[in-house]
Length: 173
Image (tube, rainbow, N blue to C red; front, side, top):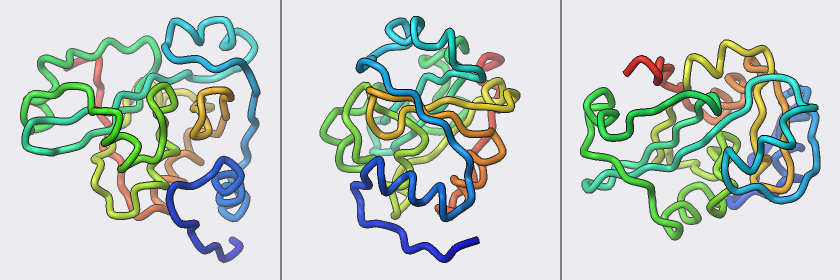
C-alpha cells in the first residue's frame, strides 16, 4: 500500500479518490443530476449494480451524533432506534452540524464523509442488509454522482480512518 497523508477536512472528491487509490480501492463513479432523496435516485439506480444506500445523519439531545448507512429499502424505526443504540431519542441533525462534522451538505450524506471526521465525533452504524451486497453505492461527498466500491473495500476505507463500524440488522429492530 502506498503511504498516504490524510488531507485536511473538508476533503474534496479528488482527495477522496486519491485516498482510494492509495488504499488500492477500486471504484467506479457515475455522474448524474443532483439527487436529494432515495425517491429522486430511483431513475439513476437502474444501470448501477449493487446495494444502493440511504444515509441518515442523526443527533440526540445530549449531543450524540450518529451516521447510519443502510440499504435504500431498509425500514428504520427511528422512534425505537435510540433504545438499541443506548442513546437519547434521535432526530435529524441540523445542517450546520452536518457541515461542521462531516463536511457535506444535506442530500450528500455518505459513509465516505467519515474522512472529514478525524476526531470520531460521529458514531457510524452500518446496515447488515447493505453489507450483504458485493458492491455498495454512495455519493462521493456530493450528490451529483454515485461511487461504487466493494463492501469489503468500504470496510477497509472505514478502518483506515481508525474506525470500526457497528453492524446492525436495522430492519429487525
